[in-house]
Length: 125
Image (tube, rainbow, N blue to C red):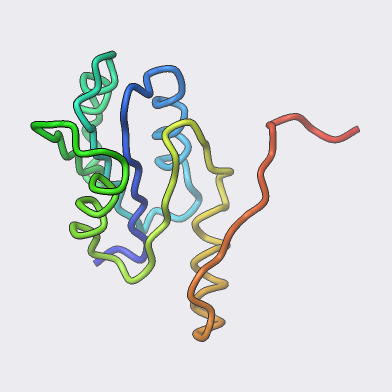
C-alpha cells in the first residue's frame, strides 16, 4: 500500500496537465499512487493521461461528465493510501512536497489536514 494517494480531477486541462503530472512523478518520495480522473474532456487531456506508463499512475476515464465533486468522490473512493493529497490540474508540486507533508502528518497524528503556501514559481531576489 502506498503512503500517499495523489488525486487529480481533470477537465480540459491540457495547458498545464503534463507539468502537473510530471511534478508528482518527480517527487523525492516515491511511495505514492497518482489517481487521475478525466471528466469527459473535449481537449487532448484524455489522450495525455493514457500516455503515462508509470505503475504508480491510475487513470479513470468517466463515460459522462460528472462534475468536479462527483469526480473527486470517485477518485477518493479508489485511493488506497492512508494520506490523500488533492491536487488541481493546473498546479505543480515542488519535489519534496509529498515527503514533507507525509512526514509531518506521521509525526502529528492529531492533525487531519495540511495545506501549503502557493508560489508563482519565481525566485525571490
